[in-house]
Length: 282
Image (spheres, rainbow, N blue to C red):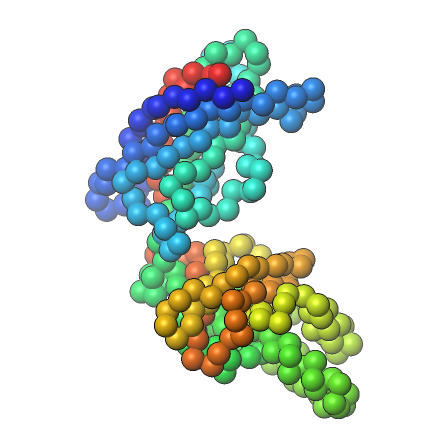
């Protein structure tokens, strides 16, 4: 059951902001889902933000819901949205909460925090790799970040080397392991390391770039690949486990392309607190 409403609430700004900014949040839709298992029941609000630029580079996500309550006296916990609570390049986002009891007629208040990600090279939120095909089997973030690794894997060359000369292939694998492009403990033996690379077989299509990823705090927001005309060439992405990432491209990557890695940094992040009151339930 859904019911459309319109509520305008001004954002409160956290202490990180030096100057006031007029940012408005509108609740444009409320959906309530009731199921036999009450743990699966939920209420979901569709929110619309105005007053800040939101696009492929400037994105938002919910950091937390600090308090939410209904007029039945119950406190409601945040639930993860169906597609997860990743960054969004759209000015609409979902707030998903536990469903209150059927006695409830309205949500008394919802307090939360939204992260606003606006990356540039200057603030550390964007790392640009020019001529990326010259950076195969290197950690692309080694000069900027110590807690994140993103290694562009030359899967095609390794596959050819393996077919041509097993000894040279083993030597190359050993060199890569010792160079530290993978995390400590990722592969304790050369054989295990080989299995990691060979595990890329059939992973992604022929016009894809393969990466080894080590990002325990999930700081990488996106990886964008552009041709020499500045056109975005990303076609899709696949991830297998925590470490293997493949980005499909519209055509085969060329030496004069570039990669832009968008990554959370202190300078690229701002936080907005918000408070929504008196939302009528459907």
